[in-house]
Amino acid sequence: MDEINEITPEEVEELLGNERDVIIDVREDDEVAQGMIDGAKHIKLENIPHSLQELDEEKHYIMVCRSGRRSMMAAAFMDEHGYKVSSMAGGMLDWKGEVVV
Image: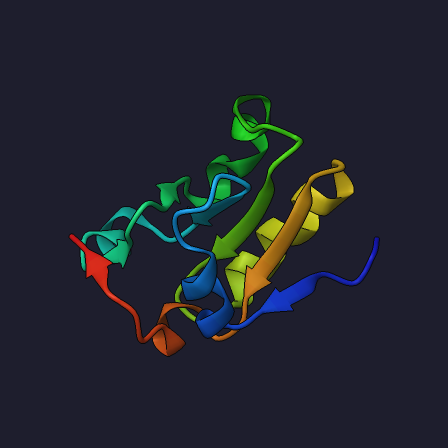
């Protein structure tokens, strides 16, 4: 496995709205209900393996969780399956941008 690229919350904020990068929030439903990054797709960590066929291999995925541990696990799994993927360092705890509920 390659080393997973970490991306800062500030870098993620700069990428919001472009067509190439897709943010995937892997947190649980109750966590997401408290707010998530606008435009992010919610796929719980446990559902990532079953959701790969729905994802475009040409896109770059940015995995997000509360603190960065689960997003790193999801990113490692996706990396093993050939996806271009990064993990947001520090997770939502370090996110200073806006969230939607």
